[in-house]
Length: 189
Ligand SMILES: CC(C)(COP(=O)(O)OP(=O)(O)OC[C@H]1O[C@@H](n2cnc3c(N)ncnc32)[C@H](O)[C@@H]1OP(=O)(O)O)[C@@H](O)C(=O)NCCC(=O)NCCS
Image 1 (cartoon, rainbow, N blue to C red):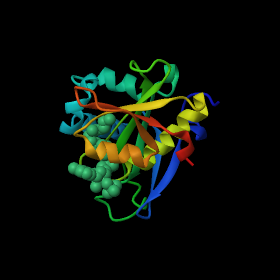
Image 2: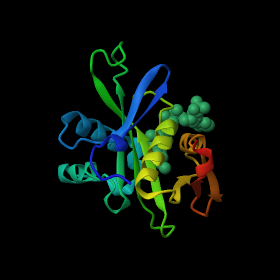
Image 3: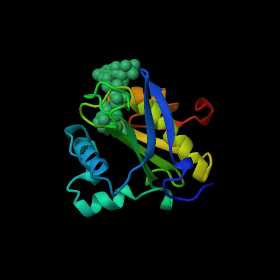
Image 4: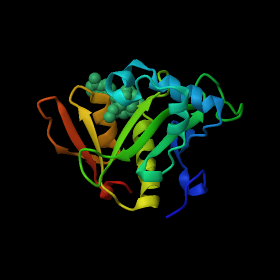
């Protein structure tokens, strides 16, 4: 298990449509990381399901961006070239296209829960690859822990994305319309 911080073990890369993306920790000192995280959090899609991120102040963002594994809280950024730029990396302009957040579950004792979201306007279809890498990075720190996500029945893009990342439905929808998905580590190869 590695330490905390932006060590090589805390980042991983993947390719999609001939472009390279990186799953890494946020840099709380980066204006760009903060700007993009705010944009994601303030998007209607996120505000509607993640009550804990409503009314976040500058201080809250800073604290959240520093969550690099302490207490099993991991916030990862999906970084890659700005799609409004023509070139891949040549201009050096990078954007944060989404986040993947792991945190101790209050539903299943000893499990880690996952949440994720993309930035409005970010390329689609990055989340499932990024979730896979995020899970591997968590494994490097804490081993093959139980990782679960709670998703609303109506959130089809989220269900498609998490199943593509190797999660399987382990609890059917309750009367509020929420089901549980759990990572099948065997699918994560
Ligand atoms: C969930 C979320 C991260 C998915 O991002 P994404 O993977 O980039 O989303 P996409 O638009 O590529 O959709 C994922 C898949 O769902 C499919 N999909 C989208 N809407 C759909 C619908 N109404 N019915 C069926 N499938 C649908 C897409 O076709 C896509 O499938 P593909 O990969 O085979 O093309 C994004 O929608 C988001 O940020 N939502 C708001 C936050 C959120 O709900 N997070 C999850 C909380 S647990």
